[in-house]
Image 1 (tube, rainbow, N blue to C red):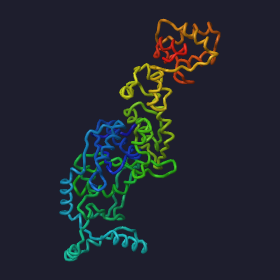
Image 2 (cartoon, rainbow, N blue to C red; image 1 turned 120 degrees about the vertical axis):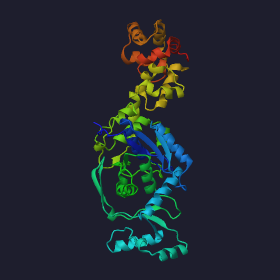
Image 3 (tube, rainbow, N blue to C red; image 1 turned 30 degrees about the vertical axis):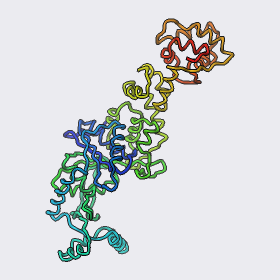
Length: 453
């Protein structure tokens, strides 16, 4: 059974940074959020974390949009953090007025030296809040030296507890953490601030993300409360890793959705494997995202890393195609110039490893095709052509075979193999019972006579 229904329609978001291509690990997070929202009649927001102007690009943002669409996830809203800077200005001003945001002037080199010193003394390498002890005169002196402050959020230093959708009761002691930097020296904002402000403003009710964000949750809850916002439900799922145990990386291009799409993997197969891997549920083909959404239960997600095997994905792509109804692929077949409607699709889908292979079978049906015939089968094939029924329909193949078998005296492979080679040019493939009606009498007769048709 899926998770308990939320009290109100949920609002969830997927907030990628447009600094690289999405991989299947990112897809896992996007799918959990989008499908949970879909399951419970909620709202799914695609929100670009694009305040890092040095690394964010429009090209990556467009690639993310294409990948999300390929997965079949249609966002109810699309937001860009780069267009919301005035709201972050307001939040910063409010936190400064509360005394929760304070300026610090240490360089990265000085901070690293401080961390090393604390480690040598057996202390945790957290920021010691030296900046809070500076007098106004000392701050002015540092700025006179040309130093520009970064701004840190002063944590309460308490146990922050929440009921995690995946991990159960969780707690983070913020006394063990450094006060997080929310504003860089150049005045730009870090994700920790922008994400919280956006979640408050957009009414996000559930934050579902990777377990690498667990520690961040304690910090973010404190910031949410300081800004007077509603604290959402948090859920932290395990991360996908390669079969070797190596983590996925946008920078290294591991299993990017763009590459998987180019390789012909089915989006539904990617979705099923990304969502169900690392859970107590069996990984199996699904015919729709709605069917996959019905399987989502955060309580069934394992705490161990989830190993994503590309070889398993290829097998799942084939199995997915074998189950898909015609209406699920009709537009794509048309885009490939493939006709034949439902009858053709049902005839060939069980023999496909990739959807593009359907085009090969359409060429077999439509022709022209050079038949493969052996000299010793010439008389048999000529007799077979003469016995082709005049009345053509779905049952033409069994009626034809019923007449040809006693007339030729052939059975088994000697009967069926030469017919398949002549009619399709292939050693194996879809059932001839399904293909022959699509090929048509005229082409079938010509191929049996050894003619290209």
